[in-house]
Length: 366
Ligand code: MRU
Picture 1 (cartoon, rainbow, N blue to C red):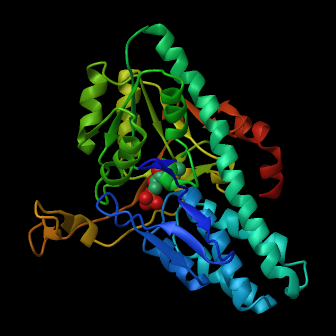
Picture 2 (cartoon, helix red, strand yellow):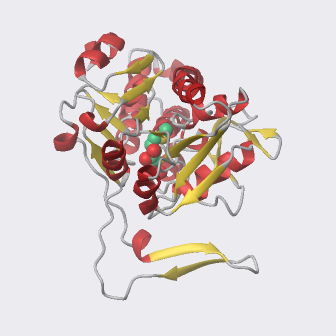
């Protein structure tokens, strides 16, 4: 998507053909900084420290991390080491393991001398596939927005989203934002309510930044605002992303998603989840019970960083010294609260039968 008129993806192969460029998302919205990853360890650290984040982008970064590892050591031991290093970089988004499994399946059977080239080729495919999938999600989600627009001619369609499931969280287009960008391009009047998404504020920092650069009307709201807006008819639909969808349709996403789904249910607001098929984990049959929930540093809760009027970045503490904090990064929304899953193969009911029918090859591999 566009940044100051120039087209960017969130990750790419650099001109040297082997190192990897990525936007350092820790610095947004204050600074647009590009990082260069030159080793498997760089890729692992980028995922762990959230230089890159968002489930599909975590997978893409891991794929390139594997390719970087194959330049260093393409032996069977090197392949195992790279897999083991990357797979633990973050625990919840299943796209990480999916991408690494894809890479290992492609690389394990071939001669180590050919592995580096094959690894870059497979990683490039994973990256291009992500963009294609998101285009599919855009088209399928657009139909939902068009249907609402048709019911209120001339009026704005208000979409609520949580965290950042935009192009920064994927390679391009985003998942939750893909239908919004397409609707905007087609001239449909859309406005996005952007949950700030404490404690790391990916909505306020990243989603607002993306939408702003793309000219999509939006308003950043404190996390607790969605219920009020829904009660007053100010949200036509919610679209969020996800880090892992269980085989039963339960949806794991950024902490606070569940509360939005409850509010949507209570107010009759359609609650959609946009996802690429690599986010489905057919090995998990019950999302609430079995999806591992990342717990992050308490400093994300106690401290806030922002830019001062004179342009400095400053971190301040907002919690009394000594007060314990908890920082669960994700929660699980039960399938019964989800109106539909917007995938590249259509809008599905959130249940095992619909997921299995749409993605039989994934269920066979699980
Ligand atoms: O902790 P993050 O920033 O990686 O969490 C990201 C989210 O929760 C996104 O909504 C999710 O990964 C979907 S991305 C298309």
